[in-house]
Length: 390
View 1 (cartoon, rainbow, N blue to C red):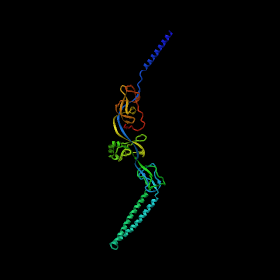
View 2 (tube, rainbow, N blue to C red):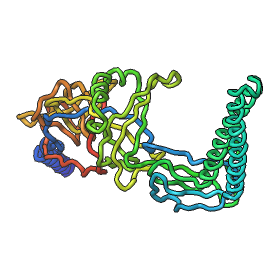
View 3 (cartoon, one colour):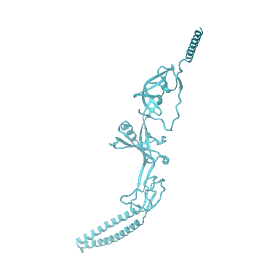
View 4 (cartoon, rainbow, N blue to C red):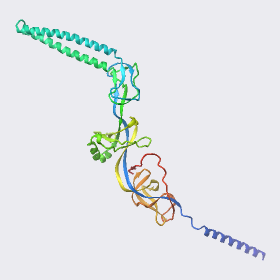
């Protein structure tokens, strides 16, 4: 009897425990909807850019070389400074050239004296010939001698001019206005030898020039617009080319198309383009690398979503939206150009639809979600968003 009572108590306890578990499960209910962050798909005009890597150079560049052979006596400029056209840069020892000029002048005076004597003799012989005192042959010989002496005088004059030029070349001046570089020759060096070294370089940096190669396909796409621009005088051309510098910043002045090379480089399949832009303060220097960017087209009322909302699955693209009923829907879409941190959706989505930006891995089609507004992060740099072909 005691055993039956004990079994009865155990059975009742088990039933109570099972009932308690069932009641807890019923109290817990279904799991809450997953939290997701959403952003509305926006419709806006999107500029689509083309970019090429370019190299900066001076609009004018001059290699300064000695035009006469001699010893460098003095450097007359501050390295890295702005110089004007005609400013003195170097001086070569002028003494040998001063002596050569003096000798040339002396020879000229001697030649003039000889010519004057032959002129007097030719004039006298003309009178004698007219009086038939001397023969025609003697008269012609004296006349030709005078003509020869006249020619020698002209040659001696040219020698004086050349000697004067050589003396002038001892003062090496800048042929252009610009920033002058570090000297490549030192005082005391022999300069102006046949394998003449560059003494320094001067570059005009305002305006500055950018050179960038473009593919044949890009050239053909932009050919018509380029020819229209080149038909306008350079002073009247609009700046249409942006420069993105190495730090990601956009240079405040836009470049004007300057020229298109005559041929495609067969080794690279590209054609060289040059553009000119203002460079106040000579901030940009030759050798800088920059990205040249133009607006290739404007996408009108393009539907744009954050890039992180788009998933790529085996070459196809999809995203998740939250419908008016608060349920998620996984939807395939066609993706177009990237726009900074956003993406243009060309089909499969309408402006205003709520797109899941964070938490997409938690949802399935038809599952309710708890949606909150997504706040985009602050932009990492000052560079403007750009659209690139996918």
